[in-house]
Image (cartoon, rainbow, N blue to C red; front, side):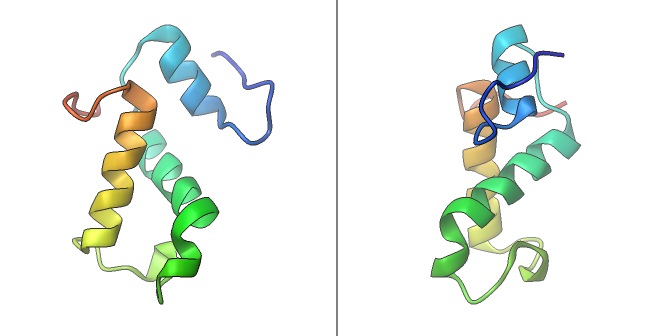
Length: 78
């Protein structure tokens, strides 16, 4: 596993990009939660854990995490 040299960049992000592998579901949700906490929490009345599973905000955060981890919105997580 490739480890991030920067604490602001997650290990799973660096590892997925460096190795060209698909993220696991756990990595996808972890990255989405991290991105939500860092960037969107102040714009919503809900914290990551309080959002409905199918909410537009949650789905958008998951899509952004997928793009970050894979470099595209077209690839499906493992």
